Image 1 (cartoon, rainbow, N blue to C red):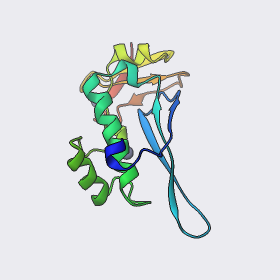
Image 2 (image 1 turned 120 degrees about the horizontal axis):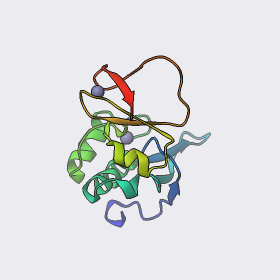
Image 3 (image 1 turned 45 degrees about the vertical axis):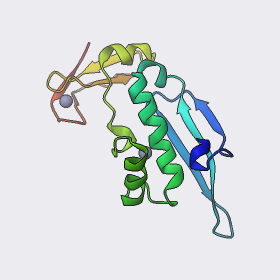
Image 4 (image 1 turned 90 degrees about the vertical axis):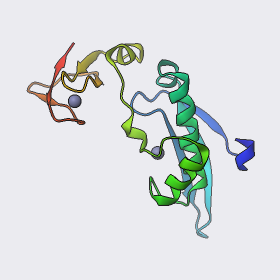
Length: 140
Ligand SMILES: [Zn+2]
Ligand SMILES: [Zn+2]
């Protein structure tokens, strides 16, 4: 982190089960953008591979370096490529059923086509369709 001039940025841990990390920025009344903190999930990071965890750290550093509001835009992508991580949005990670169980979800749904697994704490009646490939997913 220091090498990127981000040594002053606080790192936090959160309990998110839906994303691996995040970068919080704020703009004050003078229009100055500051990085408030970078956060990583203490629930998700331990269940992914080291490679994915490192990728997540780089992903969030790229957010910290990119301008406010760029989101996963071209500037962010440029930083991501420079840092050597996959230039893909955070929500693109794919978990398997075992990882979903390790994260502590009550119900595990798995897509029979693309094998992506999703966690739910409450089940609704009716069908669930896979956000990736739109097939009907099943409770495992
Ligand atoms: Zn992102
Ligand atoms: Zn699918």
